[in-house]
Image (cartoon, rainbow, N blue to C red; front, side, top):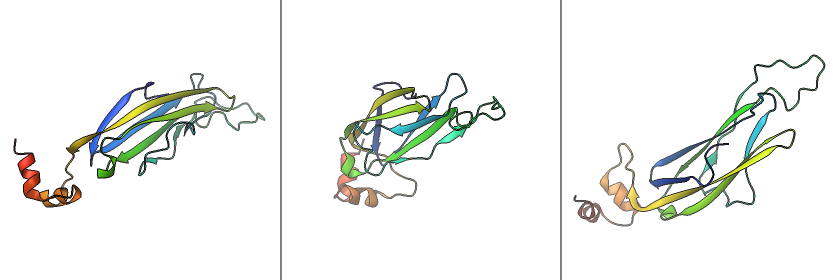
Length: 148
């Protein structure tokens, strides 16, 4: 399961954080599911965990075999998408996800997200006035603070 244990991801206000969670059954036989672990911090407000994108096995089921939980999703990818807003400044949180199979095998990975203070990713077409307004200031103060 990726990302690696205790990996830290840094993001800035206004910057999309697009994190790929991926897991594969090493045998290429059992279906794999990825979900948030309830004991970890909740998903960050505004974060979206996209539906799984599955890759089926190249192995064909045996005729008459119960194929539920096998061969249809042996490799799974889910995207965690989040764009930090002003209220997320300085946020440090730990998120945990688990990958499980029908057999009960599971693996858990936790990683950290840190949202830097006082840094902002300007979006295409966004004016200094709009950015300043989101920080409860005016464009002149914003310009003065970033004159270098």
